[in-house]
Amino acid sequence: MKERPVLIRADYGSVELRLKEVMEERGITRNQLAKLIDARFEVVSKWYKGEVEKMDLDILARICYALDCTTEDLLRYVPAEKEEG
View 1 (tube, rainbow, N blue to C red):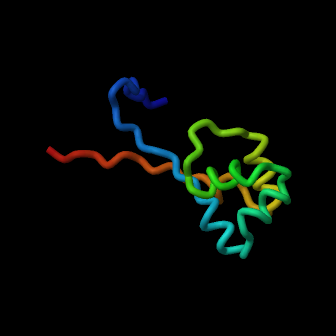
View 2: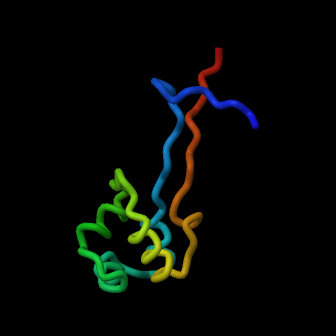
View 3: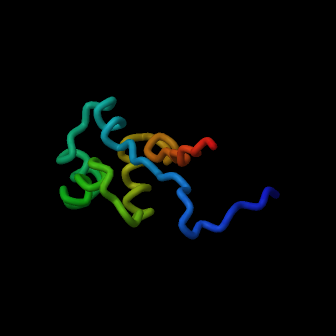
């Protein structure tokens, strides 16, 4: 297995939430999703805006179930851009 560098002060990339795009594809609003997953509008809105800092796996599972999608549809890892030189 390839050894990875320690993450101290390293730019390791980020994870993007794609809930907004998936909801738009399915024509569902934040209010509708909140009702479907039995969650507050504010919770769904944070996910929709990509403002989630700590992921609640139960909410993620409910969203996947309600939207008939997978975690891969909702989450995308974006590697850091490497500086040349």
